[in-house]
Image 1: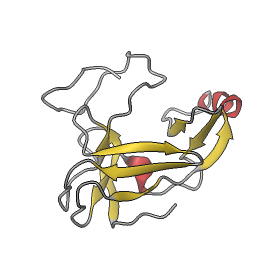
Image 2: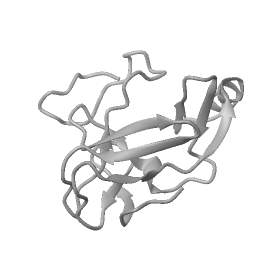
Image 3: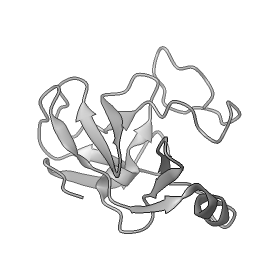
Image 4: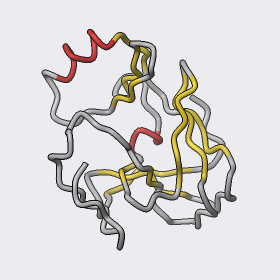
Length: 134
């Protein structure tokens, strides 16, 4: 659950809370691993039935990371169609890396890719190349 750069969580213009850089982050550097609990996809289905905001990332082996349990600031990285980070699934970790230099005060964003929303959730990233839906 180590984060290599100082971050803060505060209100986001994209959605709810966001993770913001408290220092410059160089391009291509690992930012850290998302905190959470590794659970089965069966357990995921049970948990998401009772929550409004899902903070889970699935692996390709029938497991997922539930970032609502033992979280860190990386849980609050919002989606953007023009992200400044990317996530890498490296079981049992979800790792975040800077796609480009990130300036102090900038919100960290990632392209979520496929989600459980199946293209029905309106995107609010505000990027010029926004795809409109997640």
